[in-house]
Image (cartoon, rainbow, N blue to C red; front, top):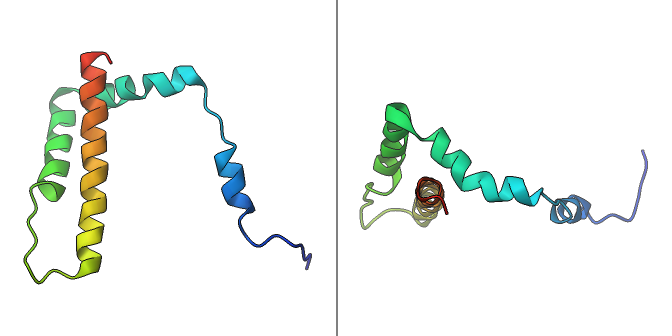
Length: 90
């Protein structure tokens, strides 16, 4: 077995060096808009919003559950924002 002095963070540095083609990055909102277009796309977005944004938790909800739901809400809001930008041509 080979030993090295890597503390285990080398994968992180490789991820930070990842450079994307600027054209692809600019197309992301348009791609999301196309992905969620039409009746099926609207139904999928509506379902995601119902399961996250419109989901109330009780006062006794565990901290972990709250954090998990907030992460889901953030992601759905982010997706909806990209779709809106793509539809508006921004």
